Image (cartoon, rainbow, N blue to C red; front, side, top):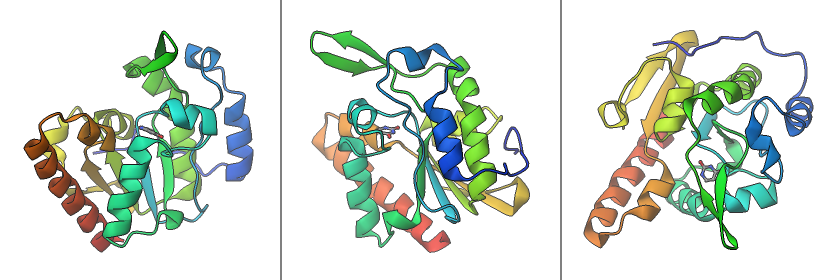
Length: 204
Ligand code: URA
C-alpha cells in the first residue's frame, strides 16, 4: 500500500504553500468557488485528518470543516478527548464544487480527475507536515491517499501500516452521518464513528 507520490519536503512553509494554493488554477473548480480552502493546523501535527472538499460554509469562511460536518466532527472528537487544535485538518480537493439551485449551492462530488489534480497540494501538505497518522474520512479521501482501489467498508475502522512508517486509518465522512434519514440507523452509525475516533485517540 503506497501513498502515490512521496515528495521531498518542500522548502517553504505551510503559509507559503497556502498562499500558492490560493492562486491555484490547476483545474476548473477554482472558477466558481469563492476561494481555495487550504488545510490548517500545526506544521508539526502528528495527525492529519483528510475530508473530501470544502462545503458551502467552508467556501465562504476559507477554512476546512467549519460547517455542519465540521461541527459534528468537532463534537465527536472532543467527546473522545481529541484536541482539534493539535490536528492538521485538510481536504482531498481544495475548492468547493457545486451546482447552483435557486439561491442554494448544492454540493457535487469531485471526480477522480479533480482529485488527482488536487493531489498536488495534498502531497505537499503530507511532505511538509509529515503526520504519523493519517485519517481518511470517506471514499474520496481514501482514493486521494492510496493508489489501491479498496472499498471503504472493507478497510474502515482499521489502522493500516503504509510507507514511511506511517499509519492510515479509514473512517466514514461525517456528512454521511448527517444524511442518514433513519434515526435508528443514524444512531448506530454515530456509535461506529465515535468508536473510530476513540481508536484514533488511542493511536495518537
Ligand atoms: N466536508 C468536507 O469534506 N470538508 C470540509 O471541509 C467540509 C465538509
